[in-house]
Length: 392
Ligand SMILES: Cc1cc2nc3c(=O)[nH]c(=O)nc-3n(C[C@H](O)[C@H](O)[C@H](O)COP(=O)(O)OP(=O)(O)OC[C@H]3O[C@@H](n4cnc5c(N)ncnc54)[C@H](O)[C@@H]3O)c2cc1C
Image (cartoon, rainbow, N blue to C red; front, side, top):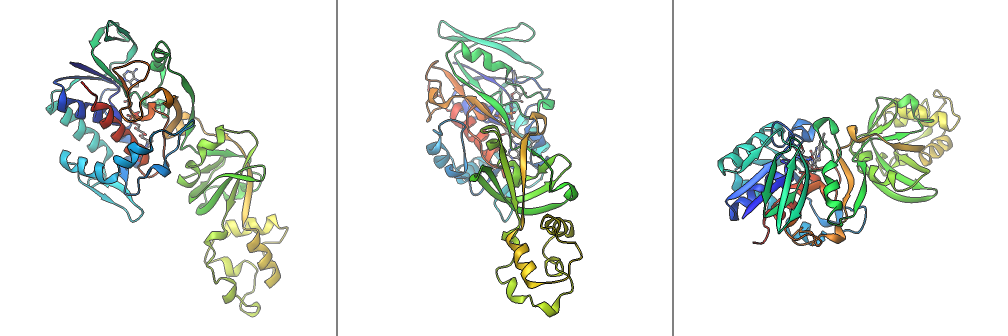
């Protein structure tokens, strides 16, 4: 039995490791000159491999979500044990983000490629697969240089469109149309959000925690609490990136940036008229001065307004900015793309195509994504393992 894998990224590598346990002839193709090119850029170079808190409720799909059972079964404990058996040693931060002890994403990519070499997986680097078809129960692959390969089973692990500067592309999806697979259009996700900047221009460069809400008129369609950075075009940082997939679902959305949850609960109790000279003084130990000044200006108050209890009460009721959303930044700035192959046409327990037996999918080509924090690599690794467990 000959197994072919298109894509030697995070999911394709794990698919090959798992497939090799059952099958002796496993071949992997990748456009790049080494495997795990994107993996080696993850986690700001540190490789945020997974998260202690992986659970199905944290994942989303653009269409219906079919993969609860898989994520439940192949959870952090499963993957952590899998890593240990491979010889990958990790640690996690207090909030559950998991990294290799070396803190080096490039090392992890090298470790995995060495491992595939030791398993005698055939690796074709710098090789782009341009198309594939199925004829007489065999998959025929054609590369950009016109070379043909034949396989009994095929795993599509070619990733999404995020970070085209690392050769990411979904051009190979065209071959899926011949099998009747529906494609959901791809959009940038885990991406910075561009905003109108009417009220936050003065805050460029400020980094802060805040509660963020995406508003469709008055209704909240998504919210998150996390770190954000104000930039000249809008908002960056994990808090805002986690909401960016919502931006492409509707027009005329607003984003609310709310600082009130940072105020200590007993804040007003410790404030008295005689203690403070300026209205801004009680807030100085909690917030960046630029934020306080902008909040005062939004209420038509001078930045040097004298302290008045009623003004302070008014100010802390309005500790937020609302900006119009213009869009997300493009694929060049996104960590993942949403969309991909419609899940209703895939067996959710094996990741095999319902339309083309013997064709499996893994990683970002599936309509599944999670927030920042290691959740997307987790999905890439476990979906690779599941696809690699293909039945004979
Ligand atoms: C800058 C950045 C940082 C990130 N940091 C994190 C993080 O810390 N934690 C986290 O969980 N997630 C992170 N992600 C997301 C994570 O990298 C992806 O979710 C994951 O890599 C998806 O794995 P994949 O195997 O589906 O795709 P990829 O890893 O992109 O692999 C797909 C591979 O297929 C190859 N390919 C595509 N088409 C063809 C073709 N026609 N022929 C041959 N080869 C082809 C590509 O060259 C690529 O190597 C980050 C993403 C980016 C861009």
